[in-house]
Length: 228
Image (cartoon, rainbow, N blue to C red; front, side):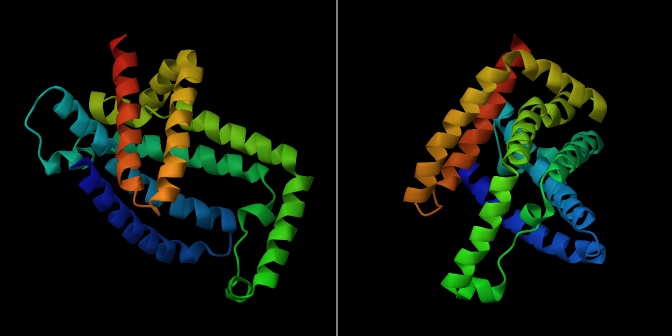
C-alpha cells in the first residue's frame, strides 16, 4: 500500500507540475517569481500528499484497520495550517536561492545543445566555470538548504497530526529538531546513501521502495522525539 501510494503521488505530482508550469507562465517576465509560483503550487500538493504517509503510519502503528483512503488524510485535517507551513518553507528556500548566480539557477540545455554532444559539453563547461568562481556562495546555499530541510521537517506533522496552527508548527519543529540536529542529519544521510545505488541499479524503480522508507523513517523519528 505504501508503494502504491508512492506511485499515485508521483503521477499526481507530474500532473500538478505540468499545470503549475502553465499557470506560472504569466510570471515569465521574472525568473524568481516564476520559479517560486511553481514551487508553491507543487509544494502544497506534494506536502499534503507526503503528510499522508504519516497519517497512515500512525494508524498502522496503532494497529488500526487501515485503508488506502487514509493516505489522503493530509487533505482532510488542518489543511490551512499545513498550507501555511509549506508556503513559508518554500519561500525561505527560494529566498536562499538568491545567493546563487542567475546563470546557475536558470541553467537549462536548449534543444540544440541536448542534440549536439560538443555543444552540451561546452554548456556544462561554462556552468562549471561559473560554479568554481562562486564556490563559496554555492556551499552557503547548500548548507542553508540542508539546515532548513531538517529544522522544518516536522512542521507539517505538528500542523496535520497534532492540529497546531502554521506558525506554531514551524516554531515547534525548530525546537524539536535543533537539539537532535546531527542525529537526524546522519539518519537522513544514511537513507540517502542507500537510496542512490538502489535507484541507479533498478533504473529508478527502487524509488517505489525508497520513498516510502524515507517517509517512514522521518515519521518514526518524529514519533520517538515527541514521546520523549
